[in-house]
Length: 609
Image: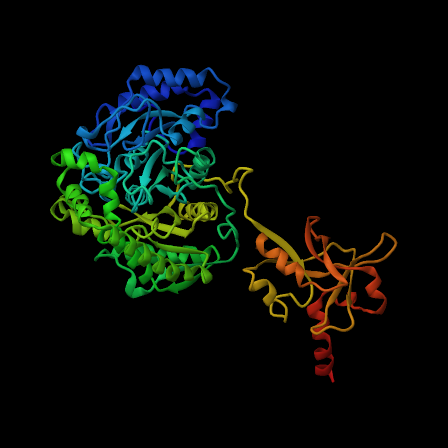
């Protein structure tokens, strides 16, 4: 019954629909038949065949071009609501049947996606291993003797097995990233609040976010464009902000890695080798490695289970816990029960401590654009995890537990395979609202790995366009004098977080003058008239946050100003121009073709003598 399976990326399926090779009805019929046999404990509940056909017929009745996810099957972690299907959070006694779907689920359905069913998870989303469920330990897609990762275990394995094209998980401590690493997937953990949490059973309400599992970063972008929106029904929802410098597409960027003594692989030499390989691949993409002190991140991570935030897990299911604690499986019960022992004073002291830690951790963003770590230091067999469920689970969260506490966005990226064939993954992280640069960089890494590891069966697009609503919050400005790199006024750009984009020239219809007075001396760039002869003048294009532009422009003295400059490639950019009246007493230095050559000319003449 796997005629049309396994599924891979979204564009491949849409192409098969467009060609007439298959239809949504055929896909859901094939999936339904395939998942009836579920030895890996992926599913808690699935839709009936008639319900799936109903979704498919509704999609088929519409124009394919009107639905960005036309007939694309997806899975839903069973702590996220799907209308008229029980939500269990992997606890049968807790189950309820919602009358409406979670906001993100409804957005996907409205876009043409077809929900196949609800997937297995670590009970109440408490765990990173996938074995804490009365519905069975969800098994790894590559080796069933190993853990799948949790808590979003079933959601990841459903994608890895090709039963759906993408799935929804949740991520509080790493639940959207650990299963991605263990099953060779992209695990996208959005900035908190970008995806509505309405209709999601909370684990830690102040930290939770819906997450996405896909085969490619491009598919994650596709889901982001559909799901991310402010939702008044979610008190933790937030508007998307400008992402700033797009390090994901930049030819040069800085990435941080922990100090060697702070990297832990828990005896797994394959993981260590593969992480070092990932560092080399980042360098090959233009990244410069910066070794950082990882201790503030580790200190924040310890707060999640050793600090008062465990009380938030208790608060999430307090009434149920008090009445039905015997229905909660042992490791989960042990963790949540400790929350009862925390006081309000503990909570406030924890908030103060986190505030201090975050100030320290955020200092790294003055040195680096993103952080690179293993997603997990190692992976464990199911039997080992069941023998030491707390200790080994703690090891799994070493690189993940701090992320939402510190309000960072993250993307888990496949990064090769161990010698035993099990996948290894890395995580890219950055401050909130920098999701798009992270996904751009994840896409570039996937392209590199795809080329080195051979054909994956998934077409990797060359670039991934973001929707029109995407904005960087950056402005570009052309400089041609003392603001050039290494010259006296360049600090006015770098102190405002400016970054050099490219060195180029203007179109060949400008002249450059050295203005009298001022120290350092100022350039006068003037565009010539049609009957005048001009030259191409060297300029640097700098990018800086739009919020910094006002203070930068305020420092510009007359006769200089900001105007539109045409570059050699025909594109235009804002930059320094000079009013024509000022050139009457200025020295024409156009024959030097640039300010650096002009400054170097006297020294060269002295050398010749």
